[in-house]
Amino acid sequence: LILVLVILVILLLVLLVRVPKSQPVTGPIFQGNVEKKAVAFCINVAWGNEYIPSILEILKNNNCHATFFFVGTWVRDFPDLGRKIAHDGHEIGNHGYYHVHPAKLNKTELQKLILDNEAILVKEFNRAEKLFAPPYGEFNDKIVQYASEIDYKTIMWTIDTIDWQTPTSQTFLNRVLTKLENGALILMHPTEVTAKTLSVLIQEIKKRGFSIVTVSEIL
Image 1 (spheres, rainbow, N blue to C red):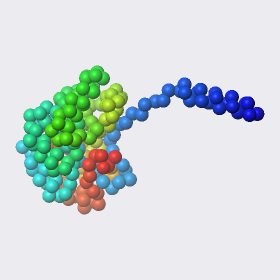
Image 2: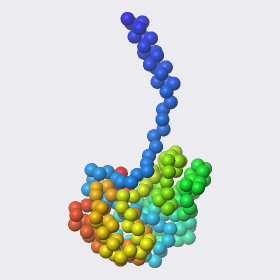
Image 3: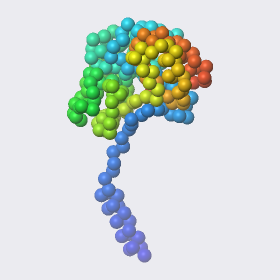
C-alpha cells in the first residue's frame, strides 16, 4: 500500500511539472469594484489645453482627484501644463505616446507605444500608473495581451460622456447621471462642455451618495 501511494505521489508531481502554467491576463476593464459606492473620472488628454485650467480648478475646489490619461506627444509639447496636473495630485495614466490606432500595431510597436510614453511620463512627473487607455478606445484580445505582458491594465469605460461631439450641458449630465452605478469609470476629455458642466456633475454625483476617486482606488 505504501509503495502504491509513493508511485501515485510521483506521478502527480510529474504531471504538475509537465502542465504549463497559463499567464494571467488583465482586462479590458470596463468597471471598477461594484462593492464600492464610488466612481472615477477618466480624462484623456491629447488636446484641449484651454479648458484644462478650469477643470483643474473645479476638481480642486471640490476636493476631487481624477485619472488623467496622457498622450506622450502632448506631454512633450506642454510639459508645464502636464506638471500642473501632476502637482495637483491627480493620477497619471498612459494613453500611448502617439494617438494612433493600436489595432494596426504589432506586438513590438504596441509595447513601444506604451513604454515610450511611460518614459516621458516618469521623466516629467516622476510617476505613472500601469494603466493603459487605448487611443480611440480601440482594443482586441491581442492589445490586451501585449499590454498585460508589460504589466499594464487596459482601461476602458462604463459611461462615455461623448463630450467631443459638443453636446449640451444637459445632455452631458443625462449621459452620466442616468447610468450612474457603483464602480463606474466615466470617460471625458478637456472640452468646453466638460469645463462648463463638471462642477454641477460633481455636486449631483455626491448628492446621490457616491464618492469620486481615482481609477487605481476603484479597482
